[in-house]
Amino acid sequence: MKRSNDHAGYQKALETLKRAHRGMTAADLSAAAALPLPAAREFLSRAADEFRGRLQVTESSEILYDFPRGFTSRYRSLGARFGRFMDKFISLSLTCLAWIFKVWIGVMLVGYFIIFMLIALAALTLSMAGGSSNSNSRSRNNSVGGFFLASRIFDLIIRLWFYSELTKAMDGSYRKSAPARRGKPLHKAVFSFVFGEPDPNGDADTLEKQALIAYLGANRGLISLPEYMAITGLPPQEAERGILAFCAEFGGSPEATEEGTIVYRFQDILLRASTAERETAAADRGKGSQALRGPLRRLRAFSSNNKTMNSWFGIINSVNLLFGGYFFYQAFNTGIIRTTEQLRASPRIYAITYDWASSVFSNPQPFILVGLGLIPLLFSFFFWLVPALRLARLDGENQNIKKRNLRKIGFGKIWEKPRDLVPAAIDSPAPECRPRTLEAEREKLIVEMGSYSRPDVEADQTGKTIYSFTELEREKKALAAGRAAVNPEDFKIGKVIFDSE
Image (cartoon, rainbow, N blue to C red; front, side, top):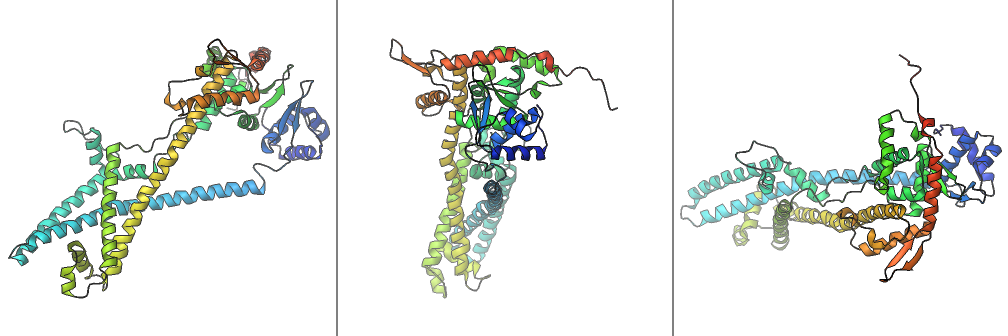
């Protein structure tokens, strides 16, 4: 069944559904709206996805489409459009703020660190020079030497910032005998510490769709809801909404077997030009639940840096925090310096900074208070706040990933062996599948599957609870019979009989 672009036909179908006081079958809609039966089936699947419809199976194995929640669109209503607008607005705003903060990091973390080191170095040099009787000449010589050393420090930091020699030394990849290899630039390593890495599961939905299409190709275009749950890791209610959306996207349609089981048919997916792909898909049928399970989602890492490098970022930020706090306190406590005696009585570093700044500002105190005090303090706070918030959220995100992966494993095992299931059999050595509360999650996914198909519960001789999903067994047999009735020869595209060139 091909996806129709008949907007007028779809609107006609919706008007007919809105006038109906109860559920309709595809034949009902076809007769009431004068639509072709294939189009009626497609429009019903699209409407069920868009308006959160529900499917009901009658005694004669017909599927009724009912819309108890009305016809407020998930995609086209004012609320849905406003929600999408707000999502895009928030996403764009966060992206802009992230880039602004990245520029701020580039200026602040290295820039202020260099400034504070120069100030500290100058104060040390002048202090050493102050103890000499020839303070005038030796002070100038020491200052020149001190600023030469400071320029070398500045050059080193810039090289580290852009070429990450520090990174090479930390991870052991730098060897004199080895050919030169440029590592990750230090500014990118800083951004990785603050903002983390891109979501490794950005393509997870696409991979799951590809797994579904491959599974459908290997199983004659038919799939059940438990199989969809095993590939996506979604619980029953979310899976019902998801598979209806998948039907609307890929031209599928639900239908009922003679036993009253709902299956989902995707005939067009079988019409594939590559015979090699069809043969590979057919070979996958014998792999049981191993071929059924979808790709596992990957855990998120705090950053791609090693712990030593992240510790160095903490040290540099601590230096900025200490100096910022020092200048803020001194500028607030000491205030304006008006006489030479006040300058000599003030703390050495503050006095030197105040004296230098007085050549630029008539009143250096506000500059020191804000420029060298408040701003570095705020930066240091946010430099730690953003990673701290990410770290607090990271564990919850990874636990959810593990739970979803465990559901894929568990639903696959239940479908593979519906009888005599022991919860401990639902397991995997992969860390992506082992949430912290493993035992509780095993029980939870059995309850979730039980909301779709109620199991028989009993205890063995050792007292262990055993679950048997007898209804799933009947569903598997009905699905197998439906697949056996599909002739793969009917879906061969044949030889090319016309070529436009």
